[in-house]
Length: 432
Image 1 (tube, helix red, strand yellow):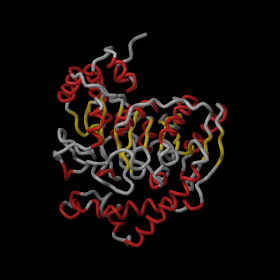
Image 2 (spheres, helix red, strand yellow; image 1 turned 45 degrees about the vertical axis):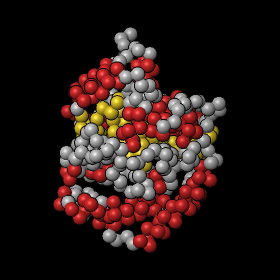
Image 3 (cartoon, helix red, strand yellow; image 1 turned 180 degrees about the vertical axis):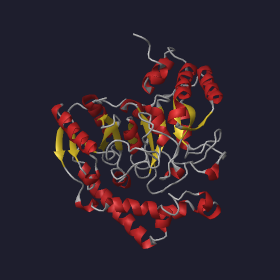
Image 4 (cartoon, rainbow, N blue to C red; image 1 turned 120 degrees about the vertical axis):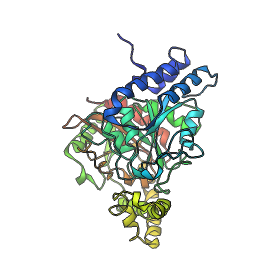
């Protein structure tokens, strides 16, 4: 059997082989860069990439005695995080060529664990709705999702094994699902946001993407500066809540079919599947998420709005949440905050009955066209509830594009969610 190209290996396998001397960080980096050279004209996942800088970093890793769980493993990071040694544009012409004075925590911690920052991945404008140039690697006529567009596409296309994104509504889970990779949004606050341009500070959550749950756990350990412990298969099959959410009527036929099929397959593998919906207290949860995001937008984007309004997109300004923000009062926001706290308590009690909640990560496959990034209707509710989310590939839709499922855990039960994810990943598999 021919050897697998390094760019197609898992992050765990790369770290092990580099540690054992079977691979060098430079060989891994060259493999990733060769893949990018071949595919970037189509996928357009990268906002900044410097081949010589990446290779120099890989050679430095090979010559260093410093160890770490990610030693020699490349990763990409969404261009919404500050990096002192690479331009940071936040997806906006306002910041073209901007060089921040320091590097954010989400870029620094993986480097401290030995990882090599390959480059900056494309984001939508300030991680909102106005899309960048990235295309879905499975079919470039379709969106990769957003706002972590380049992070999802680069991992899906074997350009890099790991990538970092952010989620305020559905910006990690949805693109991961559309591109057919594993996406993880932790419980709110567990990954450090320092050095990230804010979108909605009460919701913004750093998230990660990989091609397996085990790789997610590896990058999670680096971002939390904790020892790496591979997620262990549960001793018993999980108890899962099958939750359609209040937005089931917004699901596409392939999304509905995939979720129901996944429930059938997991039940056959031994899982207990219980149909259950969010508690009544959470009935207006999506509107609460919208109010948080809208109210904070006017304050977060004040520097751009009052100095560079002409360079903001209509998706953010006239047709977006900056316009909506002017209609929302402080009383509205305070009520939304109180409602959110009440909903989080109710959701935590409900979720404690299960190992995870089984639901949709997106309405279906990625929509055609690059002008929009798809609906986040199946994501925003979990983001405002501060619950950890994991999406897994489950099969394909009518156009051969990936369709996934999503697992939700109780807030701060992230390790338990990843363990359940390993069980589901192994027993569900992807129908490609």
